Length: 337
Image 1 (cartoon, one colour):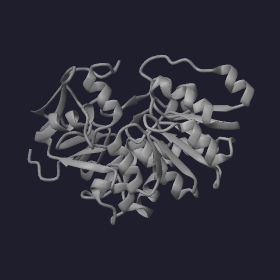
Image 2 (spheres, one colour):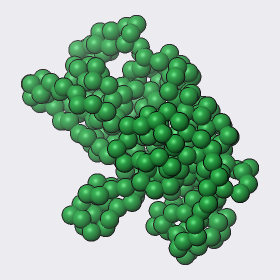
Image 3 (cartoon, one colour):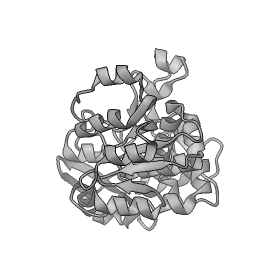
């Protein structure tokens, strides 16, 4: 079968790999997306991913064989989290922060391939009316659902989002579907700013205009109720603290590659709440599917490039060099073994 394989830093290739028959459910992959974590793997900086790995933890497909209850041909996506089930976090009902959490597509072969084998409990059925391309977006949307729920967001809260990549734009759409009407997105990439505006959001470029001046004018100096950091850049943190209102909430979604300074004194004076979120729960995953169904065209617009597996290197280049790409997915629907 065809597989997009991480060879070594800055190199991925399409290779033929044999899928060994096991007891897991076999899926025929339809679409697989490139995530920010995949870019870390591509850069050679992910601490767990090893050369030879078939990448991909955002994917959709159809059941090929071995599911105990679902029929072959059922359209599905996959919750890629692999929890141990026995640590204190798992036993407390929080398997998403399992002490030894692993992911399909990072710690074992993933969905950037013609076929993939996954545990039955990780298979999540999709509505029959949902496209498989959109189904591959379930995982990042689940990230945003989890972040909003953990933030304690209430309908009507004002929100500012730093970063207009896949997560930032999905977050804006998820917040909108949750009742938010005052959403501002901060981004430096002009192509992504245009995409945010196409989706109907206010988007500002901090390289062109002062974020603080804009926020002060818009909120009469108070700041925003909730600030989400989807950028993961140390320079963003100062602005995050400056633009949240007193007793507001900061939510860190982005994964920081290097330690960053945090102005704890400013957080104390404002009596802020700061939340850190990781992945999602099974309930978040189901909510994400329902949201995708209600705003199908908007979420689908975030997928800017659909490529064939033979264009694997091009896909990663789009996301690691200046381009208009937001979400890149690989289309495996016509691949043969």
